[in-house]
Image (cartoon, rainbow over all chains, first blue to last red; front, side, top):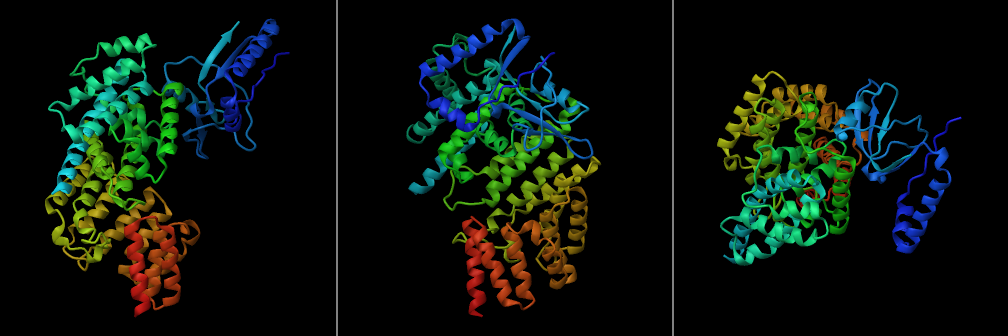
Length: 118
Length: 405
């Protein structure tokens, strides 16, 4: 079986708590993340860290199928993630062009901060 | 005398910032490839200028001065980042300009992946060279909240990969629409000044009109850009007549029309005709035509209400909105009487309950129909809903004269 693990991002409150923590605590946490990836290396196809939520752009579709671009994340209330695709394009306009032609619902565009392909 | 020298310095500063800031930010984004750093560097230099120029006088070559200061301070700040430092060290005045620098910058700041208000804020900062304090003043926000907003917006541009270029042809309509919407909002924010009584150093409305003129020069065959510029000019041509010496708002029926700039009005009307010849009507063109009906009327009594009502109907087809319907109801008052107008206004109660002009207009119509108590309640509600000093003063005046009758 193949699975996708979706890691929860930081809420603004989490972010504030994170900022308040010492550099040492940050380093410890980063080290634990590194250990986790090392331990499961053989089972992980690839992993990415995403940029903060405020760097997100979403494409919604109106009732008549017109794409609407908005600032910010997509998921709210009852919406769920249906899948994902990693893309490599020149800039946000190119990503938007792809998202606007996606034929099966809304798309959230999250920039990747760093990626680890093993 | 002191006062006028002060004002003159400020007016000169505004002109220089407007001319130089966007051009410099644009060139630096292109050279450094990083919006965040480029914008920060230029803002930093502007703040130094704002401190020193009023004392030392504006330098003969303000652009060169800004580049020198920007380079020196930026090299200092970016000491550890060799990529940017070397590029900055090579920076000389005049910075090699590309004709599209400022335009690209506008498209970046008005990218649809940014919220509308953020687009306006970024355009004011990066393209027009407003300081954070000035933007905070215009939006009645605290300076620290505005600073946070700007930092996030700049980060988003860099992290999300919002490009610095003129959009492809197939996207141009949509993207130009974003730019025009930003300029319109910026103009209204300055012209109607939704709050605050303290005079600002810079007038958002003038900067918006200046940028609209810039856009029409680059896109002379875009009728909506022409329509928007005409709309702005028609308002600016009559700005002198809007306030009395005490700063009180004078409504259109009572304005002294001899103070209107007839030449500017005629030019704007010619622009509307030029736009119409391109054969692609749109909301800005219709709004400009509406305002032109008022601007061309010799007196309030001579207003062509038939034409105005027809234009509102057209505008409603293009952009069905409760505010447009409210304005249409005002025109209807002069065609069909206060009762018919009030019925239209009442139908908008649910949509416009939080909008001060809904209550002000409703109050006026009720008063005309002799329903004094209800009228007063409506005007009181309008008063609590507006943050604008001049509008509050007008409403208070109306309330006190109504109760004195």
